[in-house]
Length: 170
Image (tube, rainbow, N blue to C red; front, side):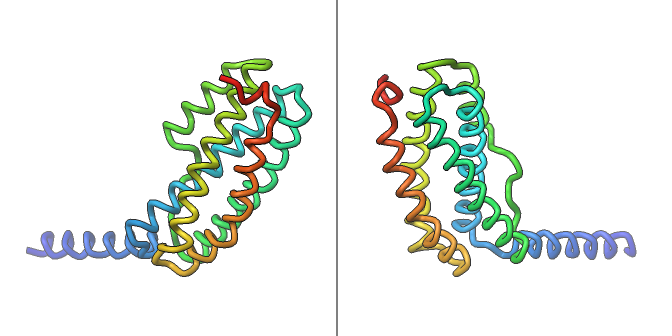
């Protein structure tokens, strides 16, 4: 009998701790936080590769801006997560890692082309994600973060389409 009560109490304590650690985010907000963190981490990693591998000054300049801007957004999201007890991924997920690894296998013009295509696709997805969160996130802190970050993402998307034409060709 005492063992059953102890197990029940331990399970209840664990469930309460997990809920508190998750910061009671709705499933929709949890999905946004996860996707936003993964996108930011992935874009920074891809851009660091571009800084190392590209010889194109426009690609390098864009990549430098991505590292700076997304690094800043990542730190803001981390701060929000710490303040609210939300869990964030600490590394890109398997899909993002596969994209980074594939990019790392390319060189020269092929690298620049793939990087530019990745940045356009990634920013198209990020803009849609952040627009939705700016309007529909349940947590006001996330709505504010998404609203504040969205103009920068829209600018990044625009600039990704302006990368050198050789970088954008398939």
